[in-house]
Length: 375
Image 1 (cartoon, rainbow, N blue to C red):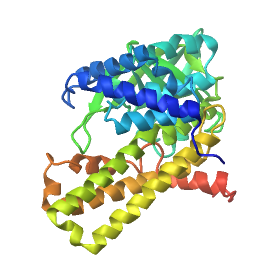
Image 2: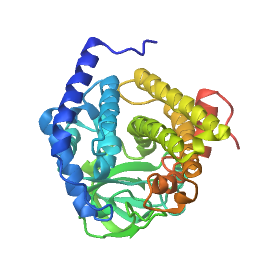
Image 3: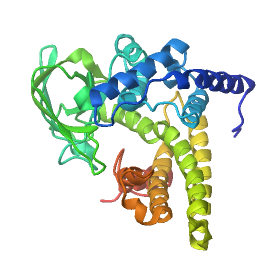
Image 4: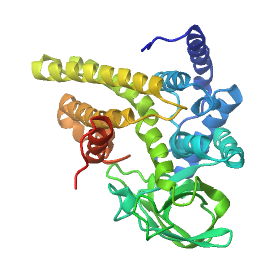
């Protein structure tokens, strides 16, 4: 396997790096983390700049390696994160690009790339989180519409979204994995109620969504009726694979900053701390190589089961990183104004978000190691 870059890929990296150096100093200040309408406008404004410069296409219409270079360089340069565009750019958009019809791709992909529409993710339910296929939100066919009732939880960016990638049960008599359908739901449809949720870190990027007889056109179905679980596996492959690329780069930067802080405040004299920092450095270097491997092995731009290996280990490594940050800060780790403190709180969710670690272990055991399924 060749993990080196071609001359064309190196040229793309250099060109992107030069562009970032010119435009990043011209950006306005970031809005308050609690002002989601302003954050939506800021994030979509950045996406529009990428589109106008010819870089928005990398999420779907570029090789996996070019996508990797883009995510690496934008994170290193301190460019704005995708923010409110996260679900559209990294989950729903790639899924529609891979599984949608020509008409669906023409309708939904350009507005995402141009920074005109925001998507949210309507997968988890109060009684169907880790066991996602146990979802109970129902959709019955009525002519050219599905009529949907139920509820979703931890719906990312629902309060500012235009569309929702929604999983519904269309055939309650079928085995639970075979009666699910993937729909694109307009968030302004009658019957939708959004109730924001506040996280441990004080942010409100998630919401509960209640659906009461919401009508969704059949033409908004991606894939066949009752084939939504297969389409969902495409979505989750992106969520557990390439969606975390920028975060690996960010963690490597944080690790260097932690070492610098430890040298300043005297914690560097602790050999146990130095060993932890050294091990984490090796861990994130290995995760970066695993990311490169996953990208190089992706078929048709869809990450394979190796994304579960990555997500499983990355979740744990991120938590260990910010636990180490707390040791470096000492008593200051209780100060919410200090760097890394809120990151430590948010890191607690990573072994749950995008599929719990237990689910990832099952996937690795069954699909990679070939072990029998548990009863």
